[in-house]
Image (cartoon, rainbow, N blue to C red; front, side):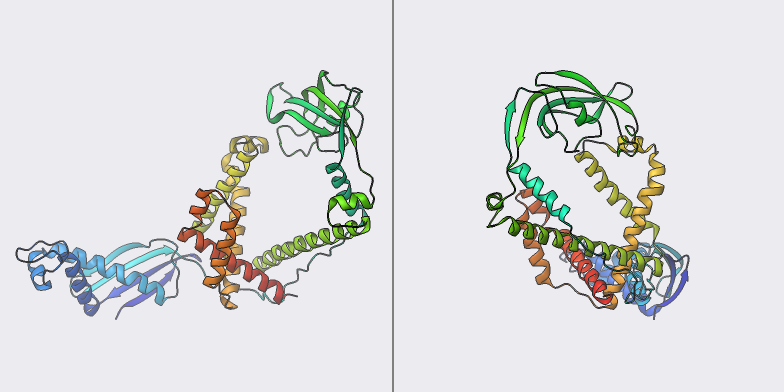
Length: 427
């Protein structure tokens, strides 16, 4: 019978010493002969149909020993890890210590493992759902945006004033008088007073007329997201293409009817309030889930294998770079803005984000195991169909049909159900 000795190298790495005797090795040799027989050519026998006894005479002792060793190790390693209830994260590093064909085999198998998570009391966490409130200003702000959508815009000859829409071309230059990424646009419709541009820009357009071209000096806020522009004195080359007076509709029952199936302005306001309340309750629920997981991580203190952190770092970097590209930026520009080297970024932000993500997955996986949370094939198929209906791109739809995509759906569903269970247990 196989003998196993376990040595914990660290909280996330283990070495098993595995010993096999005559019975296991005899069986391994029989399997090895069958495998060798599939590629051994013997006159009078079809390939793969050569009797084991004949195969044994045809192959060398060295070839048989090597194949037997390979079969024995490949069979014993997974069986040993299952026996020890260990989940290997990679192919174990195997080192043969002793091998006497037909009599004895001893070898070690070393690998990183998924450590057991010792959950803290996950049913009595302290995080609470944030309070949700909606005030009159919230509703008024939505009404104002809807008014903008139904406004009439009349092109005029006079100078720009607050509330007008200015159609402009602009190009930004940094403190070194060099164009910067994302600082250029043409035929841009800007509502003066909307606050959608940095302070000073919209104000600098007031008093200008269609056809005017000028330099507009501005100072970027100290906390501006692009660090290389934050606090800097820059300028924009601006051309006013057109000036339009924005005529907003009155806030009355007629306006409400334009916005939907509403007879009165109060019905519209009540509907807006319900929508905002529903959205904020959803946001509060998601925030509660994040806080419950964060609290459980802090109390459980799961040990994370470096291998999983490195894998997650690659995933996060890929997503991050794609998001930057969508904003017209590169990773190099982002790091330059932050005044970071790549190594500094990896050791701080990237590493910490990856570690936290893996820790969250580990504690949720353990909660799901303890609470016996499962995902049915019907649930996976329903979500899969829902996702297919969202995309018309044939390439994306093709990717969704892969086994990996369906497994990802199952994992997401399991996480969602576990989070819901965590909220339920801590009400």
